[in-house]
Image 1 (cartoon, rainbow, N blue to C red):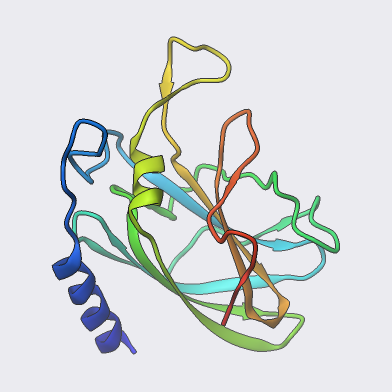
Image 2: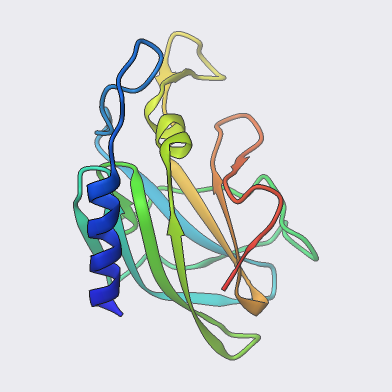
Length: 179
């Protein structure tokens, strides 16, 4: 499993190239110290993440065996609330935006273990690396630094970038990732 992940990551690194023009990013390295990711589950449908591998845009492979807790989204009953929140985590963080994530998690309700792979591309990197004016003070520049991953029964996964003061940006489009 880990060997296959390394081969996938190597292929991703070899294929990673960005052409710089005046409107495109010139670097995939973060202008901030770190970004954070958190896992949530719908209210009363608990899940627990046990292991994460993350490859960032600088080619650094992170392995997380001790993660911040997986929290309930109390506002997500029957369907996901699109305003889920990401919080600062002492454990779930990386320096540069993600290229790929691989994680294992348990759905307590299903009594099943799931393994999920997510790859991220240029549109996500651009959102995470492009500053925008703070909704509270336009003179302050902010970045999308909080990634929230929702875990639901039947192996369903949904991913959002948190937008401060605005609706979150769903990265999984109109459907869930089913594993």
